[in-house]
Length: 342
Image 1 (cartoon, rainbow, N blue to C red):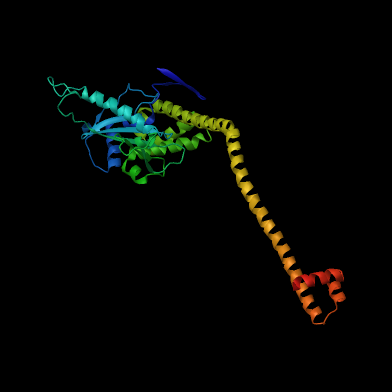
Image 2: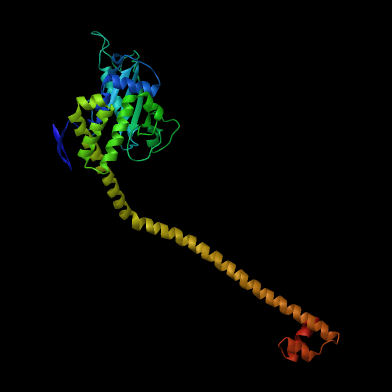
């Protein structure tokens, strides 16, 4: 048995993924209740359900939480506090191992099953589900597809796998939680630990949540029977959740520093081009205004000259007075008047 060190001390851990969710739903009656809630069914015999979780199958340090066969369907249930877009790929590896295991079981003492046989080998239909209760806001229901991970989209791609994700945080998927009391109790317990962990050391927060939940009939049976184990699991889970939050924050800051120069250069180049276009547009408008004013002044002068020429020709105004009004010499006035007549 390995150990996990938290800020509150050293606690034994059975394996990386032995979580409270696994502890609760490895019991058939609880698992059947969850199945009924998800599928809106009313099956009552837990013995119809066969748990086939591969306890020793580990990929990327993560075990599948619960796998079971019920009425020719193979269900893989996973609990997550951090969304993982690679779940379809992980489930693909896992379901392959499950099918290998199932095909290795002889149909009888004399009939071994084989994918190389000319006889069709029937297998249970797979169903993949994730029950999410992390801190990041996620929709009540969403799907993740294997095809979303393909580098190249191809309509002829021959392999698809869909994972259904349900947000089971308190306040989300109310109907689902109402149909499955044990799942609702789990959500309430997690929510209570999180609230207390804001003000208390995680060990004290867990102990207080456990005592209160037992007193209020929330997960009372399992918290009473497996109290020490639940406390240890909860401390590990919530401490790990907190550590992952710190790691993600630090990674974000590091990435920001590493990308700052590159992004700044890109943004500067983009904005410089935009500002250049804006400045050009502003200068064009300024030039238009200046030219308009110049043209207006020229037209105004032409109109004034024309009026003076008309008055002089009708002997209503002397050449000297007209020239003085236009701020020019008499000769300049006569030259302009002569030019206008030609």
